[in-house]
Image (cartoon, rainbow, N blue to C red):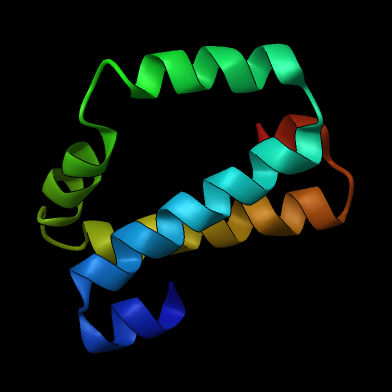
Length: 83
């Protein structure tokens, strides 16, 4: 995601975002959550929403910061903060 922001590569950012969220979902080991998320994502064009949101000025950088904060919280085991 950092490289995507540095190079302003929106395609790479969207792909990286998908991988980031898939890793969290896999780590949660919650089949019900996986099922519900998959059901939801199949009903809306989620990746298109990501593209649209990062077009907003400064949103790409802000999104990266938000993802870094989630990662830090997860690494520290701070579930509420990660949420």
